[in-house]
Picture 1 (cartoon, one colour):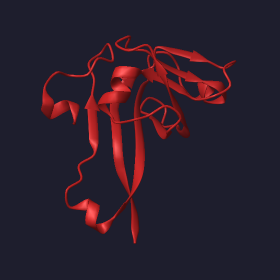
Picture 2: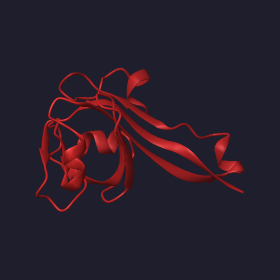
Picture 3: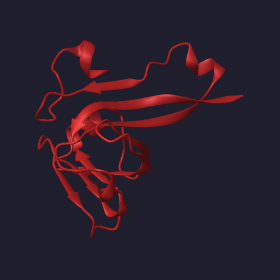
Length: 123
């Protein structure tokens, strides 16, 4: 049996831009993607702490180290610059994989840079 389990989470990033005219997706600082073990075009759920909106999209790279988080396309109507988001992805795991698995959890500062403390940055 496969279980859908939290694989990755970027906790409390701040939206730096929104772009309704983009085709879709959420652009996230490549460094945060690496720390959270997320790859381009991976499906993510986005949870907006400010307004309670939740949506699914795919993730794309923003420049590494930029702190950029841009909500694009129709989803841009669900977030505003300055909103705090939680970005999560899930993976399918069989029972044998679960014993040794820990999700990648990334906490960020007010500029969307990951905390240096390993306890807060995940893997």
